[in-house]
Amino acid sequence: MSLFQNMSGATAKDCIIDEKQGRLIFVVGRGQMGLAIGKKGASVKNIERAVRKPVEVVEWSDDLAEMIKNSLDPRYVQEVKVEERLDGTKGVVVVVEQKHKGAVLGRGGRNAEKVRLLARRYFEITNVQITTPL
Image (tube, rainbow, N blue to C red; front, side, top):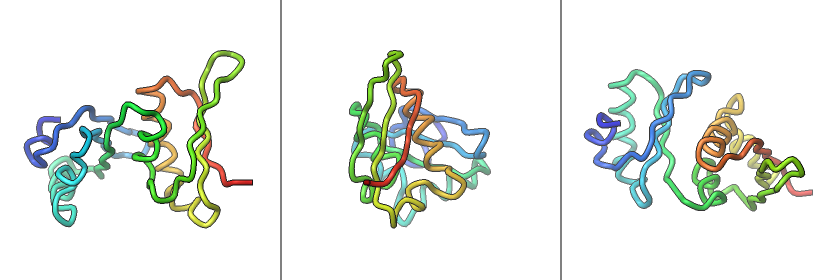
């Protein structure tokens, strides 16, 4: 995390090592996304070279819906619904347009997996579903 902070100048709240996808996910403070990415992605590229792994950056939010939008592409997310289940667990349904569903899910579901990791880690969400409007 200190390498990320030194190279980008942004404050990292957390670093998640995603072994399954072979990447690092950094959670940065509010309003620090531009600083973390750098001009034309320069900071992220430099960090990727240093750690020899793909790096993704997500902006922190205390609000579950906003955090999920930040993890995905906020332009394509229409709605985020939190559902309380009978057994006491919480689930999230993310509604996206049909034509953008592939972009939101990511190749091999990597973006969906990132959302699941973050939701489980910070909000005790057991299930995240990405769907299209009916």
